[in-house]
Image 1 (cartoon, helix red, strand yellow):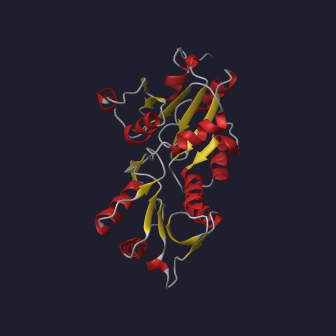
Image 2: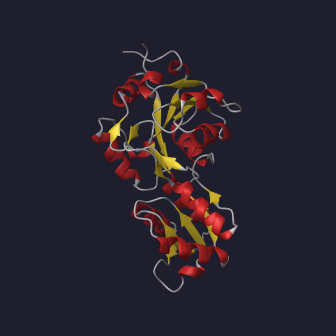
Image 3: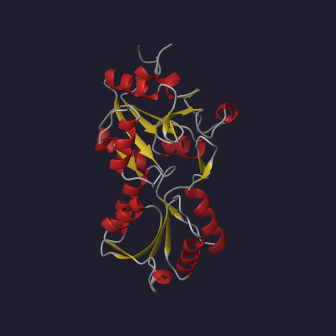
Length: 267
């Protein structure tokens, strides 16, 4: 088994997770072999995700459960980026209303913010953090709208409309952000892809070298890689069709493949 000619020209590979490495709880076709071959060829790897439903440690465990070797240092999550942004912009702390999973609550708390969900201060929070999660409730949208209209900053984990699952697309963070923006006529500050920060964080960890980003989304993966000055390849195991990928211009992908294995493995 060998690398495809394209992959031999890069030192680092930045892999999206949902729709690229896995769909739901199953890896894409031969993804473990593809990642193993990248490692055998001494390519440095980072796993990058806009999904805030898990911590970095949980992503590492999931990768291992699917037969994909990974370390915590290789996983770059938007939850960690949100923590960094909050700690940087609000070094004295403040109050936050959070829409998100337990992992997001943990990141916001670790940034030094006081979380005011379920208190009388919810509608007067300094910042509203928005990340998709499986148990979204109307009251979260209600409280967030009231806080934003009262002056809270809106910080979103991304603008992905959906993410791929075995039974079809599920609504992602972008759908929630869009609802809040429509209700408040305010615009969210976005931390995840297509903002380049996740890619730049990964590059900082990987060091110098030529890098290729691989993902399934034109709006997040392709555009985010371009914003970071990187080449990107699109795989068709997520939300993008071949016709859409082939029509993409400025930026255009350097390659389009049926799946990660077809992109990475020769033959």
